[in-house]
Length: 420
Ligand code: EPU
Image (cartoon, rainbow, N blue to C red; front, top):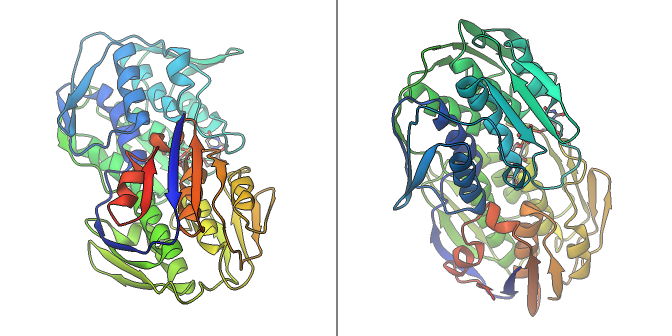
């Protein structure tokens, strides 16, 4: 159990650079299994989900490890298709190993994937797409088993909803299938383009990534290796932005892509922050003597909509605003498990299904709260910055899945925040 201690009342200043995006790094690590040559992934954060991925790669027989801040992988002739239950259950991203192991081994067994408990997280679209490409799918009580008789083949497949993970699964499978695959209704998140960028650098032939239709001409002979730098983490950047909005002060987020979290920056502008975008940096200022503006209606949806992962962060900012607001999550049923922590800090909030109603005007006071999940935990840290006195966030490992060291990152901006 980690305890994050935050003392509110200090303004933030300085600059910070977000690390590589967790949600790019995790699928890319799985995709290295498709590569016939070595890969070097540059500037990878030491997240616990990255450690779990490296353990998973080792468990299926692959070679991957740290080389300074980079992760190096080298190809091996033989892999195993059995994913250990402990590793599958440790993160949602174990699902990314379905396609590469099916391609490489011919069969894969994935016990139930873990991850944040944000509501039901089925994998039917991953399975339907792989079945359309020739996989045989068997559902056991505790695992899903996929087999292929010959090679996977190209298909024309429409996703029933734009799942990020399913789009990534099918991109990986199609890159090494025989023939052309057309994926329709896919997710357009920047991390999809990033995975496509990695696969293309390895020799895959992909057009349309970042749009709703992706066309992949398969390279059944497999991919090459490459050196690749994943894109900056837009949710980590949104977290720093939320922190300065909650605490007050002025910070610069460097080496980021402001367009990737533009909806969050627009939200901060509407809340009364001053936001100045550069090409690869953004400066955010909030005068702590002025109240934040409430009266906001936020609807989280697929990209380019408001990011679901940033919805609890927005809520944390709005707790003290001058009028009531509502945040609705169109993707996950249980996004606002952090509401109990907000209430313990003195906020007047009400979570009704997918919606969080925030009365605003709260005078937050530090207390002991529990991180219910990754982004909800980060949101409680942000709320702690706006609370009087000491807030202790008890965390059973959620926050480290997505932030290398959130307390140290915020402390570098002047926050009184540490891992106790
Ligand atoms: N869905 C299905 N069937 C499927 C796949 C998804 O019904 O086969 C549903 C899900 O239940 C959910 C919705 O579709 O209601 C969206 O899920 P999606 O597949 O898009 O999400 P994901 O791939 O499981 C990724 C990120 C999440 C992020 C979501 C949405 C990774 C490793 N995770 O999850 O990030 O919230 O996309 O943008 O890329 C986080 O970083 O904390 C996190 C949860």
